[in-house]
Length: 71
Image (cartoon, rainbow, N blue to C red; front, side, top):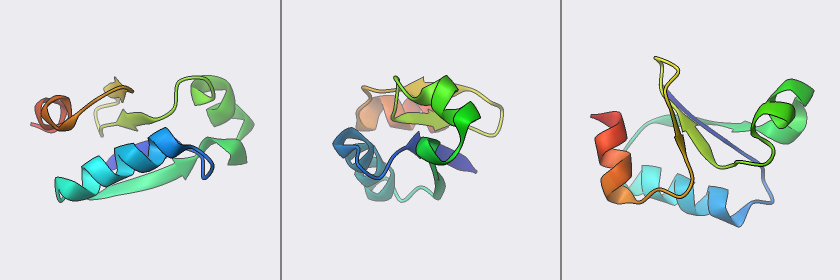
C-alpha cells in the first residue's frame, strides 16, 4: 500500500493525489498535522509518497517518476 503524506491545506498534495488517482493507484493519505512525529519528519517536504518497503518519493514528481517509483 502506498501512503501519501501531506496536509489538507496543501495544494501540492492535492496535485500529487490527483496523479495517483489518474494512475489508478490505491493509496492512503496521512495528514502530518495530526502527529508530532509525522510533522517533524515530513512537515517541510510534503507531499511525500511512501511504498511498503519504506522507499520514499519526494515532491516534485510527475507521472513518469511516479510510474518508475511504483514499478
